[in-house]
Image (cartoon, rainbow, N blue to C red; front, side, top):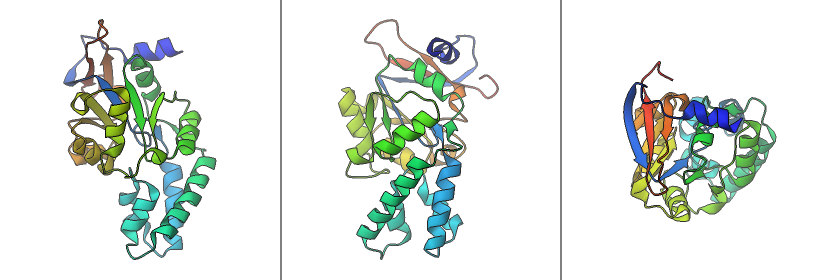
Length: 240
């Protein structure tokens, strides 16, 4: 199955390409980039908003990409952080248990297969348990290098997570390409001195280096030599 997935993400020189990014490492967000967890995320945050007298439409724009306690602090700035951390622990436990409807973003499995031999890492605001639960629910391979909520002191849009992943992979930040869907994630990638490939409908508005609707629009060209950079080709709409 991996061979078939890899083949579907391999580069065809005849394909219509709109942009090409070169990289020595690929850093991947999870929710919205590899995994579609929108239904669970919205359900959990809708309940939290209602419990605190907040309009869900005011909450949702701040949810994506950040750790939960950071979102809560933005929404309720006078609230003690201890209360935010307590709510966040409860929310993470619920999200880890609720995986119905969690699926891969189109093209995610093929993309992960195509970059298997390329230095790459998962960089997510989820904790390790939630990351594993969602990747497993979506049927996706979990990268060996993972930077989760427990790994960092600062949440996206701070660049710490991406910089830590680059350091673990032994790659200069300037040689990394970040795959992200959220404003906080795109900002974090740029702040780390990396190029950002935006994935999904949200990302285009946040000024990524390049943008795709789904990972089906990305083709991977792995160098024949061990030391060469990988080339990430963005296909034109309709070419996937």
